[in-house]
Image 1 (tube, rainbow, N blue to C red):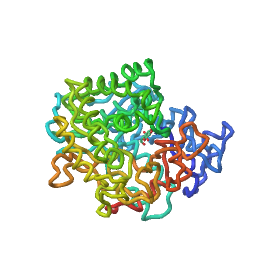
Image 2: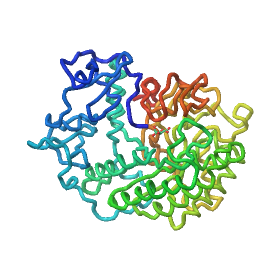
Image 3: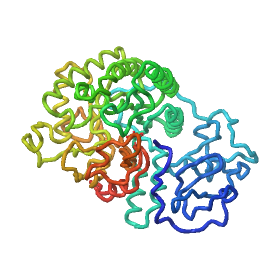
Image 4: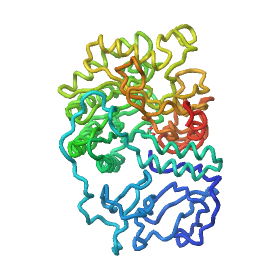
Length: 489
Ligand code: BGC
């Protein structure tokens, strides 16, 4: 996912021809805009008129801007390094990663100690992890939004897009590589932002199960449902997450665990062979990760529970009580704080126009509020000890055009929902937060029918097209989400 900005982003760039750029010597023209879609050791690449083009001048490190070759600007001040890796020292300016130039050195390589932040005393979450903390702003998302702004000309839309950079969203660890690249870097940056008693909360999505997305195709993952990939999930993914979290012990961390997986175990084992084949791996992986990560005092975990129009029906909720309580018990002594609902979905928080009846296919929970209220009761009666919820409000502010609530792919009419906040609804003490788990503007799945991960839902009438692969930047989707934001941005 997160590797590039959308290839479709070729229009409406502020046209300003560069005098020269690195790509000319490689036989490619210079870009007229600055929308980076790919970065390699030569430099930053864009696509214009269907052709690769180069952005910016020489990427030679002697220019001092080693980070530009990786798609990030140079820091303007000699900021304090917040992170160091094999590329060099990283700072954060205006919410975006930047490379710190080495005084007089031509090397971008790492020679420093790894930044001057060191974790302090063990922090222990007591109660709601979203309460009384500062929410970490993800520099990767800020950079995506900057890329989106570069493609806009409407000033009121630009103003809305800029506001998006003030809000927090989750960081998806959707491959082993992305986990290695983003987990520690963001933990360290959040640590550097902590001052005094104000803690900075980072939210990560653990998302790399063997046989991932067993009932759909759009987000099938890198690991397959077999023993050797299940072993890799443990040793190369969960164990590494554990090690990093143990290091960064003085700050709060929330983990959203494996979207869609247990919900598929509730409803799709009989109907979908891929889900039947994944079952033992999903369950074993949950036991493993809860045991390992659920014992860390500064980490709070929420298991994904689909959304109102998935597990909301009475029989599904009842079955869910059994599946989830068993999964949690299997991870003992690890603990789970609660459950995440509506991740990457579009179901409104409240929809007074709907009630149980033929229109809702007799679902007694036809909106997220009623779903969470019912789940609270059912999970408590199923014997689950810690029953708290978070609600993904990144895309549920506006009723989409979907005519069936089972539609989940890039829905037209999308609008950003309530802003991330702790304890958002009085009288629902068990609702820890509204939070943006799915970053608005990142696609749900490709509409390219020839792609391996093409899922029929992404070709349906209310799915926006043409859509890039899941996780990649989808400018139109982002712009619609801004326009329809509720409350407005
Ligand atoms: C994709 C992931 C991506 C996430 C957030 C999922 O649908 O499969 O690759 O990281 O969305 O955009």
